[in-house]
Image (cartoon, rainbow, N blue to C red; front, side, top):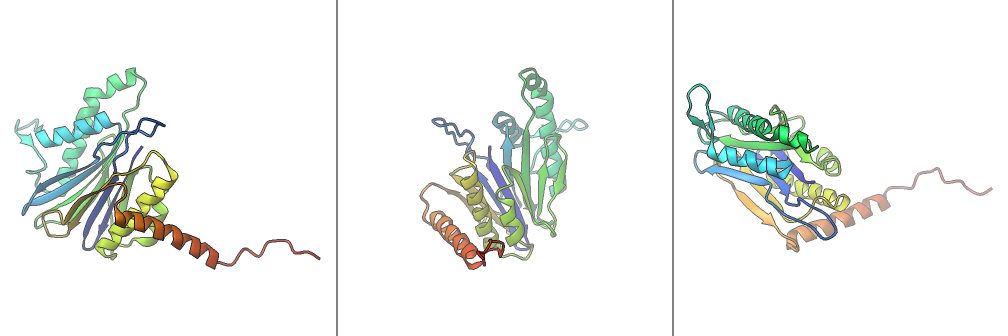
Length: 249
């Protein structure tokens, strides 16, 4: 299991991913699921992955190495993609190549080709964009009306983002709400856990403003968790009880 979220606001992009890949009683593994591709001054892109780890690692490796163009034979990479849309198409091609390579073997083993990706970033002089790429290699784009996308175990964190994030949210308020969303997911699903990787890209900056890992015991995240729990308890206590309790005669 995993949980990843991308939040696109007017000032920039926030991407968050957990690192847990196993949640057995005595078998918990961690792998980085948020990958950054950056050429400072030119472009920065980030890819968050959910699903079968072997598949997503193969996709990331393909994107680093480049994919041969069938017409020219030249390697296409995220660095030479002319737009974020074309870069998202390249990610989709990597997904399909891995499917063609490993899909049959997975079916024979009784396994599904199961993965999804969040891909976002900006090329200098072009719009900042955020996409969700499906296991077929097709994708959708984040918009102003719903300025976030999620993959993995998203149901616990979605209500937080629905209520608290708009396109006009401050960039670091978006990060704060994203972390609350992650905490809500971690509390309800043991398949999601620390450490958490985060990246913040400010619009037109062309380099990551923040690229950080939050480890267990990090003071701010611990304080955020405690404050959010206390705020929820105070909020429900402040709301009157339903007037449905039977009264004695």
